[in-house]
Structure formats: structure tokens, C-alpha cells
Image (cartoon, rainbow over all chains, first blue to last red; front, side, top):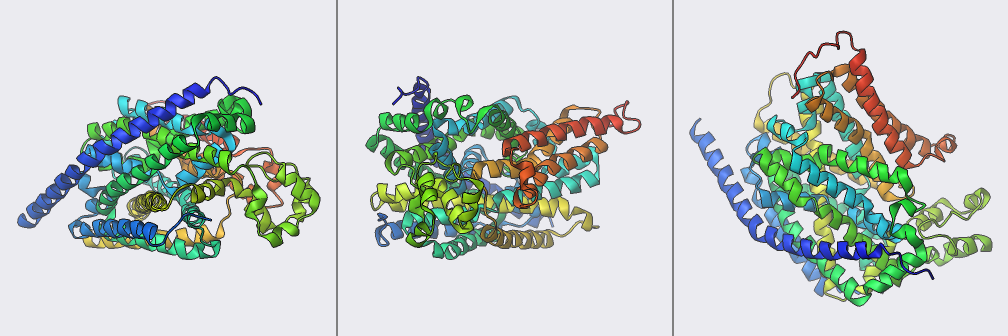
Length: 55
Length: 541
């Protein structure tokens, strides 16, 4: 068997970066995304009320 | 024997489906205008945008083809993800094309093109986008069903039932709530999907170990498993095609730009791009690693996918050659006469062996409980992708292809009804196409080629529309026709036995690059040939 290619360190660094970055972004988006949904729904309700009120 | 428990794993899956459906249906009453239905009233904020884009761009199909690439090409199989991540980050950071696109106020790309190239180009762009998009997503449902059959250990005769259930669940909330429901369910699906992907990946790294994964790639693929240019299945044409695809998909893929267009402003849209860009590395690296793990644990045994009766029907020489074939290419060592002696259904199963290796591996690798989480994660991935794709192509059909037939603007109620009807029709198409069409060879290459039907011409049109003052409708029409002609001809020749030998030596990557070149050439030649084109007639968008 040949020795593993030297480039495998690049792929190791990349998979570590993937796991760390993905875990972080999941927690960040999970906590802030819920607030985004609330804001979006509130704005839509306000917009619909304004349109209905305005005729 | 799959580690699937209907009590424990089934409860986890049932809970996930219940919460998703409730969230999807919750917003349906807030859909009042067609803009709410198609672009969520342009009220999407940054975090929701990231969750939605990531969930949409990772489906079971993604997981399957990226795992297949890892299985058949090693780490080098993740190269397309690197290309798209770089392209998305650069485009988001510079605002290249996307700032002008979002600021134009258009709901789809063809709507923007009408401002520069006229109504015919808008209509034709819509047709090409829908054709490429529907061919592309036509295989999603079947491959999603295949994954679920393999991980749960269900017989593939249940495939149609699983496909129907998946489709009905997704169609119900997409038809009723449009983009609003899609955004909220995407958010939930992103969280569930990410949890499943991360847990399974960490478990693979922990239990199998990095060293074994590296050695597996080295043994089966050599240096080509680490370096795309050293890989015989990749090479320069693959690398060039992936770079072109990465850039073009970021600029024009309808499901990607619909997040840009739903953003509250161009700055938010650009941030969604830059901050989601690294996800495109994840979406290839994570399933790719699962594919490598499948090769390390299960190995390459394509004959195991056949029933006993199918295996004994094969000549001994064929069995020998298939069992010694290189990973992912079971029929490569057979002569044309030997290939002809293998029944079509058996050939299909052998060709699918590399695609099905990852779910088969996971079905025995994950313990009860985690299996439920994995399936919930994959259902989340699949539902978010199918919903967004149905909505995106539906929006182009309504907004651009049907536009000439609307002499007066439709009321919002009528427009929303039509959009719902179109999405339901797309669902029926997905089901029928998924049952009838058989993908030849690598799934990713099929997706790249069908995507290039429109990615090539639409990216050329968008760049010319934004930055080339001499671009005109002649150039746009030539670009669309030539860009679509090359991949359609290739796919047709591949499926017609009498013509197959013409394309035997033309890979899907060659055909894809030719589509981009033909499209750019068409734009330049057509624009310059139009009488009076020496003087720029219209300003850029």
C-alpha cells in the first residue's frame, strides 16, 4: 500500500473546520432565526392591517 | 439488518413531521398578496435567510450524490463544494450582479431581462429556466425514496408509497402557504437536519477514525482520491465545469436567488450569500465523508445489490469481472457483448450500487434512536428542498411564462390560486418523472448537465444585462438557444441507442463547458450582428 497522500492534512483541516463552523452557525441561526420569524410575521400583519384599513 | 425501531425511531420521525406540518400550515392565512406567496412579502431577515438557503440547498439528493462522489472519488469528490463556496463568497462580498438584481425589484430573473431585452426574451428565459429546473429536480423524489428504503430496510417495492407520502406532505404546506410556509419550515428543517448531520459525522470520525478513512481513499483511489487533477474520473474538464457551475449557480439558480429576492434589501441578500458560502463546503464534505466511511466498512461489492436469482443468471465471467471492477464502475471491464448479456434491470442495480452504498452502511452503523434522528434530518432536508424547488419553478411559470396571457393584471386571489395550481401540477410531474426516468452514470454529472441547460445562458444574460452596454435581444436569443441546445442534444443522444455512439466519448463535463462557450459566443455574435448595434441603445440595468 502507498503512503497516504500528503494532501490529506488539507482534508483533515477542512473537515475540522466544517464541524466547528457548522455547529456554531447552527446554534447561532437557531437562536436568532426564531426572532426573525416573529419580526417577519409582525411586519406582515401590520402591512395587511394597513392595507385593509386604507381601503 | 437495519437498526431501525418503529417505536423509538418512528416516534422521533412522527414528532418531527407533526411539528413541521403545523408550522407550515400556521402561516397560510397570512398569504394575502401574490408577493407574500412568492417572495414572503420581501420581509426575510438575515438568519432566516441563512437557514432557508442552507436547508433548500441540502436535500437527500445532495446527500446521496455527494456521498456517491466521496465513495467513488474520495476526498477529491468534494471539490465542487469548494468551487461554489468561493464563488458565493466572492459574489456576496462584491455584489457582482446580485446587487443590481435585488435593487431592480424583480421577482424572477426573466422579469429583469424584460427590462433590457424585451418580452420575448423574458418568456423564452422562463421556458429555459423551467425546462432545466424541472429536468434537474425530476430525480429528487425517487432518490429520496431510495434513501429511506435502504436506511429503514424496507423493500424497494414500497418506493412508490414513500414517494407519494413525501410529495403529499410537502405539497400541502407549499400549496397553501407559499414562500411564507417554506421559510418557516426551512428554519425548523435546518435545525433538525444540522443536528442529524453533525451527530452522524462526529460518530463516524470517532468510531472509524481519520487514519482508516485516509487509508481507504489511498487504497481505492490513490492520489486521485485527494487531488482532483490526478483523478482519472475528474481532470481539467471536471475542474473547469465545476468553477463555471459554481459561479453560474450562485448568480442564477432560481432557488438561490429567490432568497436574495426575498431579502428585505440587497445588503441583507449579500450577507446571506457571504455567511452561507462555507455551508457549500459542508454540503459536500459531510456526505462525502459518509461515502468514504461506507467504502471503508462495507467495501465495493456491487453484486450484493442483486437478488440471488439475478446473480445466478449472470455468466461466471461477468460475475468475476464485476466483482473485480473499479469502485463505482461495475460494467467497465465487460466487453460490449457481455454488457448486452446482462439484463437492463440488473445493469441498473449494478450502476446504482455506488449510490446506495452510503444508506446501506448507515442502516447498520447507527444505533436505534440515532437512526430516527438521521431519518428526521433527511426528511427535513428533502422536504425543504422539494418545497423550495416546487415554489421556485412555479414562480417562474406564473410570473414569466404565463405573463403574455395576462392582458390585465390578475387580482391577488386569482394569482395565488394559479400559483397553487401550478405547484400541484409540478408535484404530479415530479412523481411521474421520478418513476419513469433512469439516471445514467453519476447523479451529480446528470444534475450539472441538466442545470447547465439554463445556467449557461442565464448567467451570460445576467452579466451582459448588468455590465455590457452593447448587449441586445438578438444576442440574448442566440445565447439562450445555443446554451440550451448543447445539453439537450447530449441528453437526447445518450438516450437514443442509434445516436449513443456519437456521444460515447463526450463526457457530461465536456457538454456542459460547450454549453457555456456556445452561450457566450451567441451573446457576443448576436449582439454585434444586430443592425445598429454599434451604438449602445439602452443603458445597463
